[in-house]
Amino acid sequence: MKKILSILFIVFISLKVSAQREIVLNYQNVDNKKLHFGFTIGVNTMDFKLTPTMNTFGADSAVLYPEINDLVPGFHVGIVSSLRLTDHLDFRFLPGISLGQRKILFYDNDQNVVSEMKIESTFIDLPLTFKYKSTRIGNTRPYVIGGINIRNDMARNKEFNEDEEIYIKLKPFDVYYELGFGLDFYLAYFKFSTEIKYSVGILNVISSDPADDFPQYANSIDKLNSRMFMISLHFE
Picture (cartoon, rainbow, N blue to C red):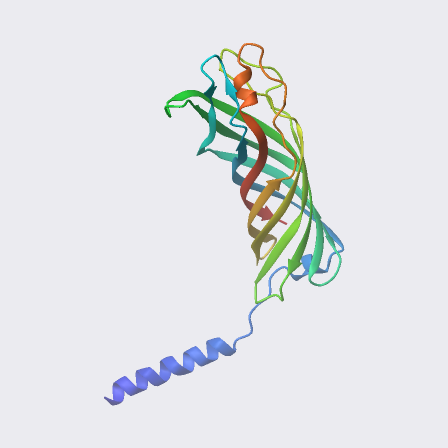
């Protein structure tokens, strides 16, 4: 019994000493710099909020029902530039490129798939965001972000593609509002951050220009608003 009590006493003393030991704060200078840089990589899924027109076409007054299909993983990279405004607030500009794909299925009146269109996009991203940071806890620091992102789709389908059965066009320019949160980890020589962000496009990106031989596809969609879910890793 005495041996057990002695062991418990030694463990208690060791834990108390460890708890009182000062935590070594890594890489403190980064938060004091007026301006610092880095890079970011991550994965994303692109989506649409789709509003159908329910317009009829043809002699039998048929209706096409468009619907978003599977979410396909994409990829993004960018450069981090962060301007310190206060101890808890940064203004950030993270220009980069996002690649991804969206699928739209078109159903007939009998719920049969008439067409599946794969819409590929390569966005030039120009996000302007504010980053609000909590008080640093040891070598971690939670934060939230919010702002806008100006995107231009370089890989949109500029022309109809009958070989791939693409009969709709997208407008290249869009403006998104973005919200997210993350966690900074302070390592010995750099700061590593994990971040989750949700982007919602404000503009209607469906072109009203229908394909001559297949106008029913463009005419079946009233609005297309882009959405994107992003998981990013920042190195600063």
